[in-house]
Image (cartoon, one colour):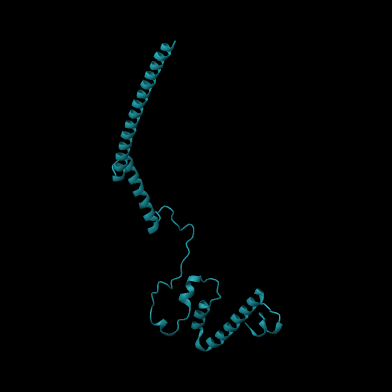
Amino acid sequence: MPKGGRKGGHKGRMRTYTSPEEIDAQMKAEKERKKHEQEEGEDDEGAAKKDESEEKQPGSGSEDSDDDDSDRKKTGVEGLIEIENPNRVAQKSKKVTQIELDEPRQLSRREREEIEKQKAKERYMKMHLAGKTDQAKADLARLAIIRKQREEAAKKKEEEKKAKEAAVAAAAAARGINSLSLK
């Protein structure tokens, strides 16, 4: 933090910003100055070199952005050694007409693994429903045991009900005899 605890510009001066028009004017003036310097230097060298330098100037409208790297002046050992650096290659954008939609898209590793996982799950479910997996066999065995227990419980309940009805009938018969004997 600056002295005095103030943030901001130097001594309260107002900030000034350069407008885009002024920047363009400065750039044009600089290009003109360079062009005049080159013309003065080339008059001594000859007319052949003048034509080459005019073609290589970055201001001409016929150049593409891809050609900038090849046209720029190489410094140091760069001119002697041809470098194949894949990280330096400028990415070329494809036009919509160049993109082929017919060719199959390459799946990423994660997408492939996800699809394989889904297919394996579907296969397992089919085998499970068919009763071919260990878990399905265990489930079916448990179900059979439960069914048998329920059947036994139902039979036992039925027998108890019949026994109860017989006891009630016997009690009713005994009461009937007692009621008749009292009269």
